[in-house]
Amino acid sequence: MKLSRKDFDKAVQRSIRRIPHEIRQHLDNVLISVQKSPSPDLLEAMGLPPDEPLLGLYQGASLLERSMIYPPLFPDTILIFQKPLEEMCQTIKELEEQIEITVVHEVAHFIGIDEERLIELGYE
Image (cartoon, rainbow, N blue to C red; front, side):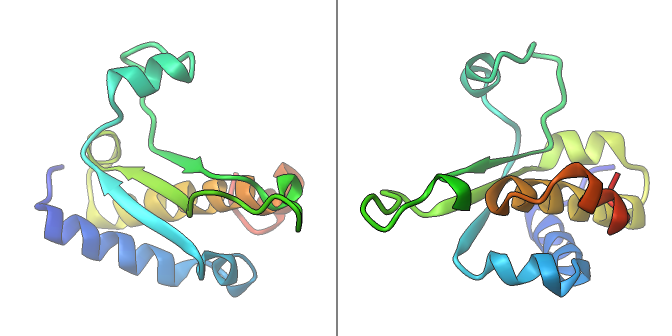
């Protein structure tokens, strides 16, 4: 599957609207940025092989790492990687579901939701 950037952005917006309020409320001050693919440097820095599909990435300080004395220097960002997501999906419905799962997992890194709670919410 291959979408234009505009159509992919619309799929991301629809996916975010599907996220339960309990999680979505934490996106108010988080930038969501779509990139075509993760760079080889990023994959290397994360210790991933070049052929490893990276769907998304949270960049920033989690709520557990923050303090009033040392606020974060940069805005929190969730990167969504278009090409790997398109390659693993065959329909728009599958794509939107996978984008939703990816964003939820990245938000979980930010707010400290554990895997058990994600499973309870239907995000395995």
